[in-house]
Length: 203
Ligand SMILES: C[S@@+](CC[C@H](N)C(=O)[O-])C[C@H]1O[C@@H](n2cnc3c(N)ncnc32)[C@H](O)[C@@H]1O
Image 1 (tube, rainbow, N blue to C red):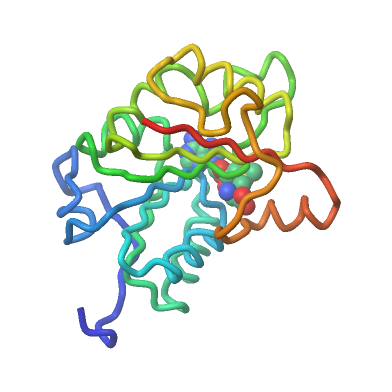
Image 2 (cartoon, rainbow, N blue to C red; image 1 turned 135 degrees about the vertical axis):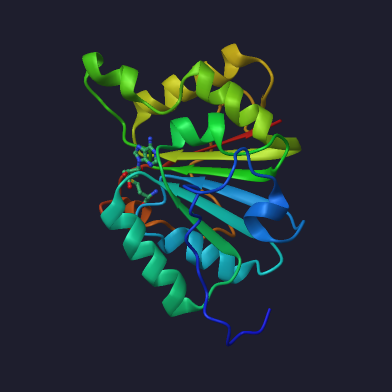
């Protein structure tokens, strides 16, 4: 595509029939990654700039953050990102055809720390079933959090699901990660010297 053509990062699903295949989303068959809860879009824009041969699809439920990310894509002229303003829980069930994504990123999801709120956590059995269908074989899902109880919750859900393998084996996570941009929350937590837990699961 001509670099001067105006870019349109928004994926508007209001008038198209679902579910969508890769060609309908990105207009090509390149390797593709999904980011859930991209916040203001710093991570997805930077990783897309670093990997121009990949496609990136981000989902964010908060409109103000979604709009900020759209502006960031336009400022950076990134042509391999599509952004969807939607509830990721519903999106993974309804919006995409199976076997589309080679990577999934879930960075610092809301931890819902109180016992009575844990049911709101994005990681649950149905969500993992839906993600599993959307991922390609050997696809990797990366989950990052500073919240140890959410890390344990997530590791247990993946163990019970049984179809993914934990890349970090017995320990279950790593305290560091290489070759990846830091998200906004990650930078803040690093500045405060808070431990960060990097999890990764393979289909
Ligand atoms: C704690 S913030 C982390 C933002 C970003 N990933 C980062 O690391 O800087 C969690 C983000 O997930 C979004 N979110 C929460 N539930 C969601 C859902 N069901 N679907 C899509 N986004 C969601 C929130 O609006 C928020 O932007």
